[in-house]
Length: 244
Image 1 (cartoon, rainbow, N blue to C red):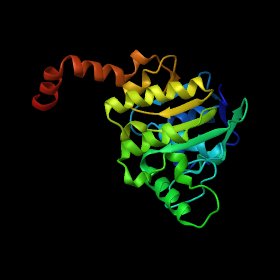
Image 2: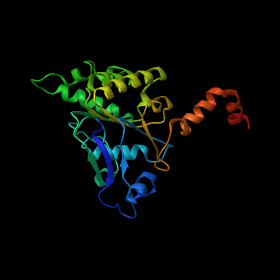
Image 3: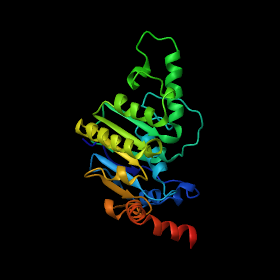
Image 4: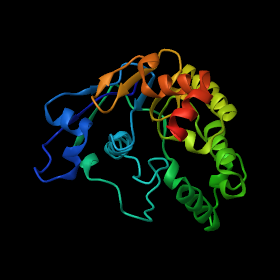
């Protein structure tokens, strides 16, 4: 099920906003809407095209904490998020029963906040029990991330992931693909900003190329083409890069 159907701007940004240098922001400023027609949507493109900024803004507009977590997380360690979320209006088909916003760069802060809340006196169960029972700080980055997906993501949810490949080896990315499919089968929706051609290969996914804000086929992405070219001809590519 798709909970998030579209996003659009509800008001124009100031003319001097740095956000206007980003293609997806200009696209929305022109009156376009960005639609989510499939259970899995990827934002792809070069660094600096606005993938993470847009995903963060979508998360904030949907009620998530800007630094990550569920809608119940309200901690703040470094107020660096953009104001774009305040200008977006999400169109929903329905409301999810679960949800999580993962930011690779601030996942450490989420893990810390969980430990801090569990350290406070409570008559209820420990929060970490919903994440596998072991402090996320006592696991590697990749282990803690998979523990989050395998234990905390319950299905029938909206999951926003910003560059999850930063934590995972290629084999663990394949595990993530399998977990995503399990959750999609359980009625979930994913919106993911990524550079990983492994993740982008999810069957039937919707891919938006962010430098031009257009739908793109998997095989047409620069990520796929460069990775394939390198793996097929590593010596030739390295000779070109290092010696020419």
